[in-house]
Amino acid sequence: MLIIAAGSVQAQHVPLPEFKNKVQLVTAENQLGDLDNTDLQTDYKPSLSGSGTARITAGGVKSKVKLSGNITDRFVVKIDKDTDPADAVELFRFTVEKKMRVIPVVTIKMGKQRDAELPKQQLKFTKVEDGVWLVSTDAQLSPGEYVFMIERPNIDIMGASAGKSLKGFCFNVE
Image 1 (cartoon, rainbow, N blue to C red):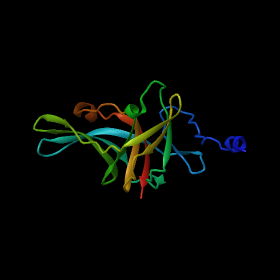
Image 2 (cartoon, rainbow, N blue to C red):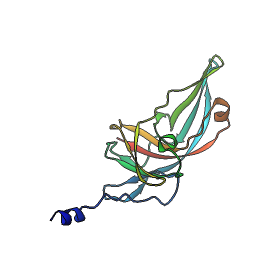
Image 3 (spheres, rainbow, N blue to C red):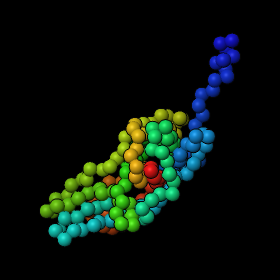
Image 4 (tube, one colour):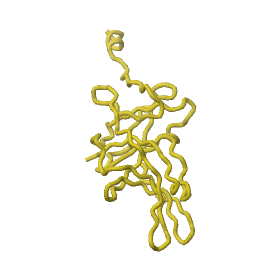
């Protein structure tokens, strides 16, 4: 009887993503769902006082993809096999300014550059197979706009003002 019961219990299957460096939602039906595949830009916003902020921006104020933000929300990502997912995959909360979503990265005051305190969310990673990771959050996400970034480059004032293009995978928590 025990052998029959053990045989009928199946390990939870996580669908495998087709593409590398693309974060996807794992739905309640255990299917893959897309997040907003969003073009991000770096820019530099100077102030009248001579200080300024390098930031990552996304057009629009709200993602089309709406999630609960619960710790039960699950995502999956495929990255290089020998890469630590905690180093490669990051989840940030945007602030909304006028008609765009913004993440401040670096500030400059009185000629000194300082890294901004990034609005980075804590993530948990569970290995599915080599290079494929199930991702979830440590805590309930508060309402707002969020973006997953894969292998985010270091951004400084000069690099931000050059307008570098990046890729993000966005969602909204209401």
